[in-house]
Image (cartoon, helix red, strand yellow):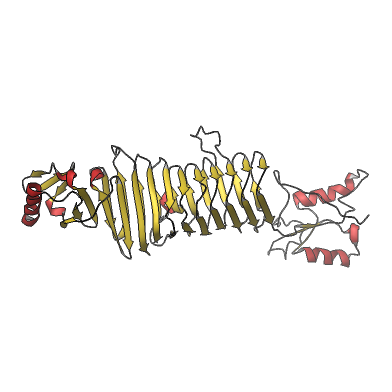
Length: 441
């Protein structure tokens, strides 16, 4: 303690070169003050010292040194290395930034009196690390070769509800993964995605970011997301839930986005508190987008208002039962670019055209097919092949095959009983139905 006080007194008396920096180290957090920021150091006996309006208790200072390094104002840098993390806070904002480090888990809360936006730079790697930030000012986050895996929550959780500028540093590869191994899911944002941004985010930079949504979504945004021209590559390698789960609106102007998810590829929900004209819209104006989803009853791209595709190269592949490529309650307008949508499914019903293509309005025929499609009435077998086998055994051929539905029921041997109601799929309100017929003449 005496050594630290003596050092501070010497610095106060004699000063140092203007390009040098005074580093005050408290555990894994360093506060870096320039020469002019130490002009008004105040001592409270031998217990504490105040530098640039930040009070340090002498007992918490683990090291103090003058170094030949310059630190830019309004910056915070976070460096991860295995089981540890180090934070450096610029001296001019030291009084406003409260940083806590436990192992490789970093928590930063910016005071509401913080006068300007702060630039946070995150780098390094940890297989058991995370980053949390909250505040009342917009901020810039530079991902500069960051690899974080958090076993119990989001890898990066930005709760600041203001504008968040996300920068993927040129030439860098970044990767984030979440988990849920030793704590309970409390329903908070921390357990909803690998990357969580509570505010609106605008993305730039030519680097890349890969997300692994092992608990729920890959990326959760509570307000709009804008992907700017020149953006590098955003990849959701895995997502138990949605690839991108976005509120307010989503606008892609450039960059490359690759999403592989079990839930929706991109899900955009309208925000009740938003007065934005684009609220609920999903808009793609440029870039390259690839979406692959495999869950049951999910959507490749979904929004609560209009979907507008005016550019870009877009591919949507949906393989789950009852799933749709594009879904919107408003209009889906595709006016430019190249968009490919592929959906796959399974045969749910089998019927001859005698019951489904009647020209003479004989309801007694059509009713059998209608009730099969909508109510699941008619013959029931485990597969379409079994339905055709039954028809052949009963002497039904070609257009005279009676309506039947594929049922999935282990209790009644594949649903052969008339009372079975476990069907692969029936037509419901809101479903899309496409009719087509091919005849060589």
